[in-house]
Structures are given as structure tokens and as C-alpha cells.
Image (cartoon, rainbow, N blue to C red; front, side, top):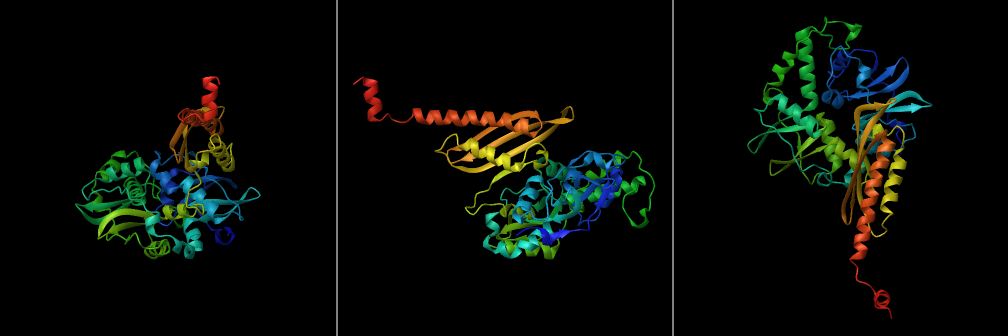
Length: 392
């Protein structure tokens, strides 16, 4: 099944030279997941809601400075491949290109709706996150914001003792702070009809600080939409669509026990028939000089160094530093392989993802060979070996 039937030809765009204030105004639309950035008529990239949350920017800055180069897809891309790219790039919207031209976008909600019936084969228990991060009603919005950034999550259940009393999302905090700061400074906060202006931005950083000191209870949503571990993913997704939310708190006997998000559901679509995940690349947008298929082949070649081990899971993290060399950023690559013998990890740095991955690959390869050699030396010698050692 490919994505040809779920491509949307209507999407929000901004020019790379537009001020960031236009971007924050656009995200006042709670249904908007990303804005496509163009340079005249050419596609440049996207800015996601989560990216806006985690970046430090000035309202007068340019949208182009926040552009994120997410993977692009074509009309014939398989839905599972699109789901994988969404998870690994942390973008719920992917641009669709045809002949190098932007022709539309594919949205995570449309993708999930397309495959919803097939999700009955899995339960919430198969995909939910049991390591639940929470805040209390008295915690500040600043505390919640830091938790979102540090944990790279988008939702925080609010608990009072053992009671689940609400939930706050990253988009709630972003929308609240940008909207109110814009109003207090007379900023241009929206992309409203006719492009109406509301004045100019002033330097009022204290306004944001005061709002981040407000308690979470002032912004949390209540009651909380919940599910149970034995509910099917089909039912969970239907609930999310019906309630207009992107996550459900998982409860056991009315106590919060975890959370399931649309990203968790998308990730389940990437599993192989045996239930094992493929090679997951975090920061896949940095793979500008190397294809995903080549990365997966590299992992297979590493595992082949020892024919007696079995790969269970592979995760690669790519992180871009500020330093560049002739326009190419310095990249940190971390490779983590989980095999039936345990974990093998290695990291490396280089200019461009390809260089960094090759450095990390060499570290992991040495570890695999060392483990193989160590395992061989622990084996008891057979009769032929003992005979040679005795000399007769």
C-alpha cells in the first residue's frame, strides 16, 4: 500500500525570509503539525511544532534559520516506509516531491486513518511507554517546558499524589507563551485574513519569564483521555481521532501506568513480521550524503563480522554540531546494536553523516571482532588441537 491516496495538496507554507513571528502565529492553529518553508517557489524544508518548542529564536529572526531538512517521499512510497521516516525524523508531516517539485504533503493522521483497520492485530500493551514522566499541578510551566526538552516528549500527565488530574502538552505551552507575549508586546502574531498587523515586537523577555512561573494547573487539560493495556491499537487510534488528541494515558485500576501516542502507533508499523524493529536512525534528516539503505547495509555488514551473533535491534543517533567545514556540519554519530550477546556501542565524529558513521562503524567493528576472539579463546580445544599442542 502506497501513500498516493492520502497526499494532501493543501498545506501551510512560509517563505524562508519571513519573520519567525509569522511562524509562531501559524502554530496558533492547534491542528497544524508543521509549516513547509519555501524559497520563492523552491522547497527548502519544514519547521515542526516540536522544533519551534525546542529552539531558541527571536521573533524578528528569519524562518529559514529554523528549517529542518526532513526526509521527502514520492507518490509511490509505501505507507510503512513513510511511517518509519516520520518516527525517525520526529516529523508528523513529510513533503511529497515529484520531479524535484513540491506537490503535497503526507500527514500522520491521514496515514493512520488509512491503516486503522489493520491495527486490530496489536494491543496498547505492545507499544505503550511504561516509563511515565509526570508533573504536579503546582509545578511551573517552566518545569514542564524543561521536561519536554530534556526528555524529547510532547505530553506530560499531571498527577496529584496517586490521582491523575490533567495533562499538559508541549503545544499548549508554546501556544500560550507565544500568544500572550505577542499580545503584550504588540507583536505580529498571526497569519490572519488580510495579513492584519498588530504592531511591532519589543524586547519583553520578562513577560515570558513571568508566564513560565505560572503553575501547570492554569494550563492543563482535564479530564484526561485514557485507555487500557488490553485495548487494541485500532480502538486507541479511534479514541484519539474522536477526542482530537494525539496521546492517551494508560491506566491500570484507575492509576496512571504509562502513555501511548500516535508516534508509538506509527513505530509499530515499522516492525518486521518477526516483531523486531529495523535499523532506527534518530536525526535521519542529517543523512544528506548517505542513504538509509546504505546505513542498513552497513549494520548488516557489521553483524556479519561474527556469524554466531543475531541482531535484535539497531539504533543510530545523529547529532549536528555548530562547527562546519566548507559548509558541511560536524556530526556526532552513535551506533548501538543489541544482539543475543548483549549491547555493542560506538561513536564517532566527522564532517557530514557519512564520515561520522564510518568513524563509529570502525569502533563497533573492533568491538565485535574482540568479542568474537574472546569467545573463541574460551572454547575448550578439541582432540586435534590437543594433539598438536602435545606434539604427537
